[in-house]
Length: 227
Image (cartoon, rainbow, N blue to C red):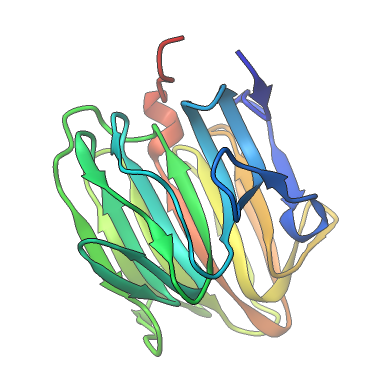
């Protein structure tokens, strides 16, 4: 079983824009793999690019699928999903994904509660969210929350220092702007994963930062598909 950054107890920082595109089994669909455990059916976090007029064959998500459209328009038989759309297709859901104009998405597979059956679609374009009461300099746009995890878009004010402990495991993906963490500079496309026992302390860059954030999910463990 192939493994890429599969140890959830380790800090991982990947600048996805620096990774090569890897061809998928479907023509015109390429991936930059951030973490992966498994072969073609895998627990995975990836940036996926659909060329114009490309598509995947129909399939069922045995372990669920979560994605954010980074640019372009993602499409399936259920509708069109423009830039900024956040989607959760829970375990047992089925669709035929593709894109007539082309698109790029951040996608996570096989990282759901097995009993989750809640579909989610949130349009985030143009939304700034609300001020976080306990974190000065942050605005939050909620995407999904349950007893297991919390997913949101955060906007950090220029130069603000953000500390987050007891987060239950954290992932963030930089959408715009920049920040620094543990001496590393994060830019658009950078993906950071911290284990539950490692607090976040980061500083927004001169233009601030806008990022996708997910917390809580690593504290409960994440299964992988069977071989």
